[in-house]
Every structure is written in structure tokens, then in C-alpha cells.
Image (tube, rainbow, N blue to C red):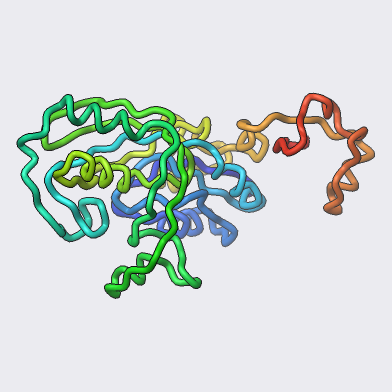
Length: 271
């Protein structure tokens, strides 16, 4: 089976847990996810199977859309509700207008400091492992892009918003930083990924539904490799180039139809 599965990740499971469950359901070893979702988070998690694992690096490139809720007045060591509270501050002086102004300040290109509780590695060791040992290491800030940030509701101390952002954006860090601007601290209390690239939550299937499906390739949420590359423009490959590609050799420019439509550096699906 070569495919990409759009899984609606349940709360309480790591992305690796989802991969393990898919392996058991399908009886396959070659399975990989396309970007870590924290255990607290739910929503769209593309999972690649078989030859689909070769597409992971391309599927991960898409922008992400999240719905998140933050709580003012408390900071935690993980920047979310699963961590230990490190400080409490009075938030009663914060108004809805203050919240809206603070959020507007985080749209566009911003710099984020990756949290210690993350899957990033330092000398091969995941930062979250070091954090649990009480070790904090120096980290370089990362530039990310917040395309859209829309407040859905304000019921202080809770604020719910939707955000479209580039890959690598930490929404819990975004919540933490908003709290810093407001002067009362904040942490993430709920997170759902609504989409990654053009893949939306409405297309996803649950792990239980996948397990109950007698023909996995016919299940909702299962994409062929060509469907999984739908975010990229496609070019036809002439017959004489097919053998070259099968041997890992790039085709000549004259062996690809529509090659003049693409610029140098474009990522193109060759069909």
C-alpha cells in the first residue's frame, strides 16, 4: 500500500503513537508522519505509508491553520496546560481591546524562540528530554510567518483565535508571547490543527474508522500519491524519460511537457 492518510489525531496521543497504531492496523512497517503535533493537540495529521514516505518532506512544507485557546494570568514551563505553573499574575486590568491590539502585533513575519519542551534537538538530544532533566540550553530564534490571526471569542481570561502560519510556528509560544506583551502571562489550553496545505479537517478519518475499514485504500481520508501532491504543479514526463526517472536520473528539459511554465527552483510533480 502506497498512500497518504489524512488522520484526525485524537487528544492524548503523540504523533509517534498515531504512526504505531497505523502500523498495527495496516500490518506495515514503512509508515511516517509529516510533522509533530503535541499530545494535547487534535486535528489534521497526514501519515505517509509505503512509497508515500518519500513525499513527507514536500507535504510538510504547506502552511498550517490552527484554532487555539489561551488563558491569561498563568505561565507554565511547557507554555501549555500540560506543564507546571511557573508564575501567576493579575489579568483583571486587561481589556478585550488590549488583547486585540496585542494579537495584531504578531501578524506578518516574526521571530520566535523555540520552547525547551519541543522536538528540536541539541547535539542529537531532543530539547524536551533536556528540559525534563532541568537543563536549559541556548537556542537561536527562528523566523516564522503569521499570515492571518483572527480572534474568535474573548471570555477573559480565555481567548480563542484562529491562525494561519508557516511551518515551524509554535502556537503555544505565540500564546506565551502574547501574554508577555499584555504583562500578565499566558499559556495554551486547547489546540486543533484545521489544515495543513490544502488538506482540511473535513477530509480526515479517525484511527477507529481506519481500523474498521475492510479496504483501506477505499477509506475516506486515504490519498493516492498523485492526490497527495495536489499542492504542487504537475508536469508530464515523456516516455523516453520514464526509464531515466526509474533509475534516479533527472529527465532532460525537452523530455518534460510544459517545462517552460516553471521557473528555476520550482518544485514540480513529474507524472
